[in-house]
Image 1: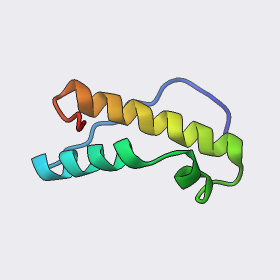
Image 2: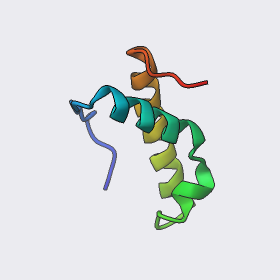
Image 3: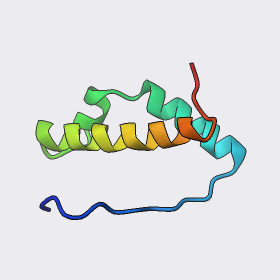
Length: 65
């Protein structure tokens, strides 16, 4: 899939779901994505997408330390 225009997603999560997913994104790393990706390049794209979601969660107050 080639890069195209940005995709905007809206997701409703409970407080607990948001916190838990923020915790997951804090802990997940390249190796975790790599085992689920076709190759390293795809794993990095997945990681970068995860970081965007993590930042969005942080922006609304879900930023575990």
